[in-house]
Length: 390
Image (tube, rainbow, N blue to C red):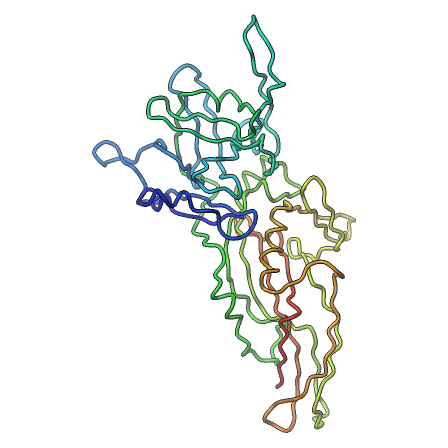
């Protein structure tokens, strides 16, 4: 998952490019071209149409333009490679238009070389769906004032497609029409440690406290798989997904003292699921399947026998679980926890009318760029239990 940084930060302080990715596995930076970093032409009257240097911004539509020769332009999205500082200049290159829209540039191998008229010839590999850990889908970018940009493969024996390895191309920018990226600072640790307030009433109709957002990231579309969408449609709908982390208190047990008897304790005995997934608000059936580095979640069949399936890259799932384990949530073992406890009444009054037992829940929410929710992933922290009497 990615946090954002303004390009102006790196223009003012180039040494920041060497900073490691944010804490935790499978993380990286998205660069936002902000007003301060905009360059101008015509004595400051117009904004420049071209990107002059690395790093490439992700909040702009970028197009590869050749200085001479080839008149074909390539509309692309440069996404920084996970777990690398921006100074590495390593990117996934995604095609934005054409029949390969939504697919990643894939490097050829030395074994793909052939000879033509005694000269070596490279047969370019067609773009493929992104596999983030595949070094043959990662390129390192170079910039020269003399001949513009070019790229080489991160894999030692890899050869980038011709349109990337050819020296002498520039990058033109434009404002996207289908998405806008805002600040995403990652986790707010101080807010997380504060925990949500617990001063709500048991007499209300809600079974949980109001959620508090404690973190925000972005996730490129290639890490989220909506089975009902083709890659090109998904890229149109949501080039990036907004990911937020919320905290709330969920009621897991409740009872009433309707007889107004002088009861000094309540015995709690309840089964709690450690994880729950909802797809478009519908509860997942728990039959999660891992295939080709993707964990697929499925809803129960509706009245017409249809199921919805959404997949998350295992890199995203691993990152979420790491984020939860660092504050006490435990993976593995049974998927459910049984909580048994005799809770003594500690109220000021002699009698109580309502009792509630609550568990701390942290929820990751994945939203499309139009604000609609794709998937939510709940982690229940059964070591964080609170009781309430009224």
